[in-house]
Image 1: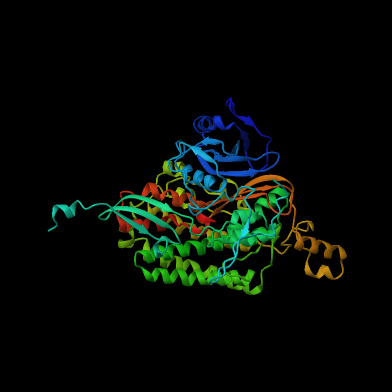
Image 2 (image 1 turned 135 degrees about the vertical axis):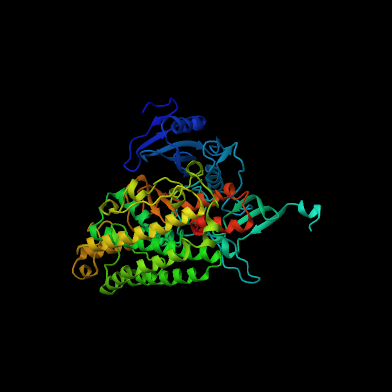
Length: 162
Length: 395
């Protein structure tokens, strides 16, 4: 396929038909190009993976499927913490809920999102739990007049020090 | 005679759920209604959020089976299959043929239980409690089959990386054969109760229309997409666990309404039965677990004489398997649609990230688009026709 200037090909991997990377600024353009020019009209998933090494960044993943051959394509874009990325809910209205989830769990800001609020966690939750530096804590069982502090889980070892 | 002010009544905000029997779990809908007409609907989710994805990052691969089981709690075998498939893909492990057949049998049985539960509760919403009784009685029989083969009724934990946990027992085979002979009659009965039922038809036909384009825009999959005319079935598109061996058709409808989704699911039950029969016939004696000791437990009797086996057993149970680095996305056709796992492995004994793409999430989100304009009494019908499982939505 003729590549859009914003797309860079990633090394192939057995489980995806193709893997591409693009810069966060070109995201909407790249997805529009894939949707309009290459029939990738089905958005399967929007999700993210958080990394601490070598530097803190979040990979946003867009999983697309072609409407005729059902080939799967993975588009990845890397953003740093506190960097906003454009919402793609104008291309796929259904993506709005998925972006809310990514915001909720990873703290990624989506510009021009119709309603960027927490979706799974309570509104007063502090932090974004799927970030790798968010500790997994165990909630003590609450008995009357016996409130214990949250204890960090002992099973978790992230192997990194801040 | 209503006065003018009553006719132009003000807009009422109504909370439907989260504790409401007809929202199929802890789904909350913020409805704005004018009389009986729904003006806007906002699904509010998260009441069942258990942080499974976060928890998976600190558990060994074998422990994760019990976690993903509980996401979509009505079709646990599919979660187990997709997770096992993802890990096996990462390692490059070939599952023995007998284990593949066993997996397919359990998955298709689970699809039937899931559809039966959906059918029973949907019918109950329209006050047809006899359908509910028939469905639940039948579902019970399949759950007993699950119990016979795996020891658990709803969360079998039957999958292992590289195969399955137990082989069939004579009791399982006999009961399964008996059930396969009896199920078509029950299916006919359910079909006779509903398909031409005047109340059922008039309540579901033309209600909750979702066409193909809307499905693609709103990321709907599974029976919702198939009821809109698209033969999208991952068992055909990207066959897994040997689905290419079986002959079955993908039921589709053109109408895209609640009734079409009902018909699609009913046909799917018949196709599932046919797949179970084919898999049962095709099953030959053989291993049910890959012999690679780095990833699968040695058989019990080997521990008696082999030090090597004891070491492997110890390593696998204490630390668990360590798949190579890599990322993989695998998906299965669950009763609700595309259930996908995106797995990132950093080579350690627990995943770096496990993303669960649950079909119900999109189906709940799209309620916002299709509910406005309907009557309040149709809202429950439409929710039921989407068949959302909130355990999967919230994860």
